[in-house]
Length: 115
Image (tube, rainbow, N blue to C red; front, side):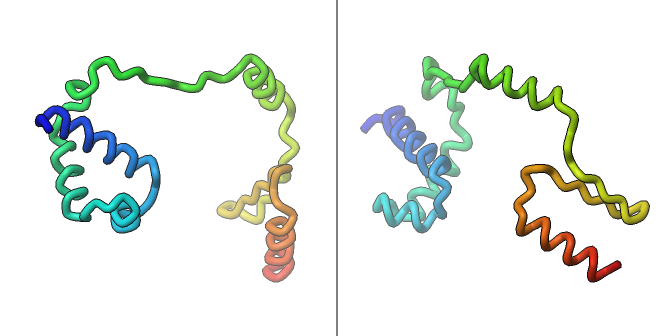
């Protein structure tokens, strides 16, 4: 395997590792790669210019649809229905409509306890 091929091969593996979110050990065990080898290539690839490896690599970005944009505009134009509680100058609690009922119950319980 040529040097460029190795760099390309390992850059793809390292990218796969980073996108997976697993620990070194777990990922390496699943892919039968020694941890020392993976560490070596991660260090080595930090010094390689990624543009020179894949100059024509496409970049994809998800753009919001018109529906998503309209929905966002509607939400931002509506007045906030959040509850604001000011206990003193340093304590402020804001409870949004999406707050889980369990969390709201816990907040109320603590407020009663410290009242």
